[in-house]
Image (cartoon, rainbow, N blue to C red; front, side, top):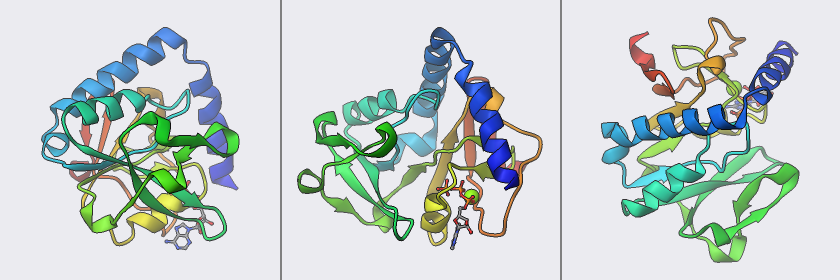
Length: 189
Ligand SMILES: Nc1ncnc2c1ncn2[C@@H]1O[C@H](COP(=O)(O)OP(=O)(O)OP(=O)(O)O)[C@@H](O)[C@H]1O
Ligand SMILES: [Mg+2]
């Protein structure tokens, strides 16, 4: 219940972002990601397709393709609240499912196993500097990350960084957060 209130509040704050600030700060975040060693050495990168006002990830996918990286995106199974990742090599391999969310088209994409994911860009609404995350409420990432040992990075506008968040036992923190103002190494906080 407490998480629900936090989610509503942060959504309100974010939806007030004007388009130009949104574009510029998304660009600054993407640029910093490109400079990170964890990104540069990653061959396979898992990422979601952002919807405004989430930090734009479409430019990250384009950049990844240009650099020869394998880009994989989630296919969610609402009944079990689980997901798998499938490779996309073109935005035309996406289809719009619920609430304008894009997912890989079943017949046009192939699953990539968790052990092959070098970096996961983890989505979220709000974060603490320690890397704790308020997601969209499905628990998909908390479940998936339970036995994941690779690198995890979240992208966030400064307004999404909070002093405190409601945290539960199953919540798994990310290793790094990139905002328009810099990189936060969560393990050092
Ligand atoms: N590892 C897990 N095993 C079983 N249930 C879990 C696990 N992780 C989360 N859940 C359940 O999923 C629901 C949503 O969890 P939570 O509110 O933390 O989602 P979230 O972190 O916002 O979502 P996401 O992880 O998709 O970003 C909760 O009811 C929680 O108990
Ligand atoms: Mg959680």
